[in-house]
Image (tube, rainbow, N blue to C red; front, side, top):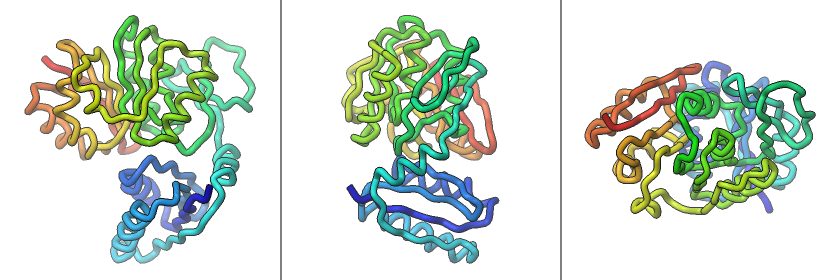
Length: 276
């Protein structure tokens, strides 16, 4: 199946900002190169138009930015992605590797992730911070939902931390497929996957909600998240900037939910939100 390939040439100091803003239009994974960024996504005219309009606007502010759309076979993009995929260590505990990487003979817990277009390979700051915050919470026998599961990396780690009841959901069918493949690779038995919205689980109650998404979605689903959390439940979330923390906090204060812990990496932030 044909995918749209996007190549962006831009000054280095703008790479992170552009990748962050464009990620709001879908689960886009960007590879950095010497000149800028590149990514690929399913042939979707609506997403392409949104990206095109955004980049045209940015060009009026930063004329050095140029971009180009072309078509590429999905398999060809995956080969490029795999070539640039390297093992990653998260929270000094988890060794994130692809099936074609050698195992590590040490005390790290191995997590196998197939490189794909789904978000969540451990290389982005937000995923790393999510795992760091997960390490501060007891998952044993906890009921967990992974909202926007991507590759399923957080669900897999939740099971390795002792959760026996995990639901991984995403609105993107490719992400759900990716999660299922990675569940099998890691011989997980406690994770159920579904293409779904969190609103479908509003009558359920969870001890822990994992949400590595973005500020707009976290705000949009604040009421649903509040309804889904058990009385002493916690949400671990990321996908937003340091400057977004106040806006996020204000959205959840209205629901008697509060930020109890934050961490920061390279202008990105992650937080634990709970009731008090």
